[in-house]
Length: 349
Length: 235
Image (cartoon, rainbow over all chains, first blue to last red; front, top):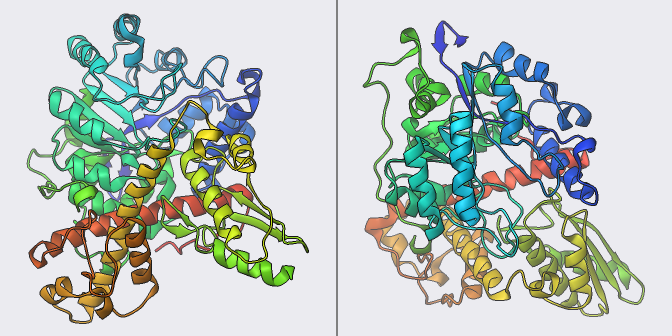
């Protein structure tokens, strides 16, 4: 629970990592990519306040003590959701696999949730693995990377027929949150890996599932917003918007937040620090201190305490059935919903 | 001849746009060096915010930079080098062989899709730039009905509107003096009644482009240890 100016906030950090990108884990022959990847992430850390920057060495592999200190002790995060990212083509033991995340989560069962993954191109074997993972780790969510390269395939989309059995399997197993990485990526080469149209299809066809678009489709915020207004089960994951813009580009940050509050609305925005790229505390503090800089922003929705309570934790707690103490909850009718605009994609704008 | 030629090459590079951000690569500080020999051989080196920047856009910028340098009279051979990028070798070698994107990544892509991708972003940029011009005109007291009735020749000249016309020509949308001043992304006409909503959407596209550009600039500055000259003062 984070406390500020007498207000108490239940905090769910919806998007965090516990990775090992140390040189010992670089796959022989792939060192340049393993090194390049983590150094790219480290450059992102440079967008946060200088006093929160780490050395590259610590950044490559931070300890459990660092994690506990930064998430639970400093930022007072009540619950955090570990996303799994494999990248086994570059890292021998994987970047942050479900096994690595689960080993940490086992020690803090009330405070950590582990998300799994699936890939429709794995077919029957993938379905069996998902079932096994779901049972072993009590999965409630999965994180998907549609742009991942595999054999001859240059990525896939959520609208592919091969995904259908996986959605059905998720429903059967009680996995209701599908996080989709729509943000900076590697492959495929020619297509736009940030395209969010496939989320639109999948969300319409599977109203029982929630689709959380991580990084709000940055750098395609507009496509994401136009789509999210029309789909009640599409959510905005704020990781990177907060860490990447709030400190480095405060005016753009205000605009992006204003647009998200207008199009997507406070009921569908989820806090995520993207730890270890950025520590959560300055992001929580910054969000609670945030105001529009001047009159140029006057026609964006103005957030209040209820808005912040929802974004920081209550929205995610609802999606993940995380129990929230009575005193930290909000009355059912608090806050303001988003504008219900019938928007259209840019092709016809 | 080289100092003058170098200036002209740099001038041409200033008209090469990052296809995703719709900003000149020189403003974005992506051109790390530009050398011209006494014989007119040019070497342009490009650096991007991260080694993992999308290869498709990286290729488009490298190819456009090469074409831009060739436009300068007196220029002989042009070498464009993409520095410190994870597909830099493939792209540099394909450029040296005079091949396209397919040449860089045989069997993994096709040029038509790359062209379609570029077109899609040009349409986004067109909407965003037009809205910038529209907002400025509305502020001077032009009524929405007057605005949507304007012809190209009637809009005061300025960099944003010039860019709109450039984008329209590249997208094969009429841009002659008698053509409508403002059009939808697909080239269709814009009605005064839909202007407020269109502007709202256009502003969102612009915010997206600008926020992106902001991240790219900040990343490049952080990675190279350059002073971040675009850094805003926190309010």
